[in-house]
Length: 128
Ligand code: 5GP
Ligand code: ZN
Image 1: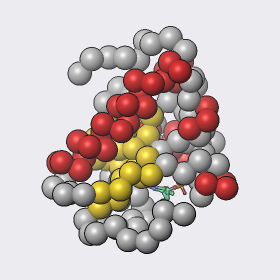
Image 2: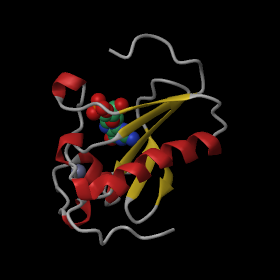
Image 3: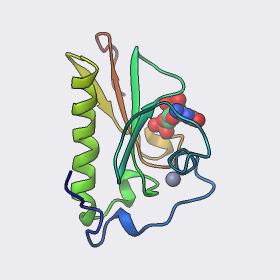
């Protein structure tokens, strides 16, 4: 895979937050059921799944919310989204939902940006 981690202005140079739950998962200090990993991206099972398949996809670098991504992170954001596609294909999901909560008002609880990937049954309900 091409390594985009040296890109300027992106998340790669940001330090990890030792208090952050998902940074601690990246560091292996808290166990997780990993589904995919490369130099910049980690995917793992959500501990409280809301569908038969519920994965979280995160940048390994600490980025608190979507609002903290910079223009230089465009490729990283694309790779997070493409990881959702690859996971869905790997797990045989004919359809699935990708969501990102931003800030408390958006439903965000863990302040290390993450995509939710949900599938394994027909998605229902309203997004909001
Ligand atoms: P948010 O509401 O911030 O978008 O979603 C946070 C997600 O992280 C929730 O779906 C929650 O179940 C999940 N989560 C919280 N703590 C842990 C944990 O320690 N391990 C894993 N794998 N998922 C977690
Ligand atoms: Zn973090």
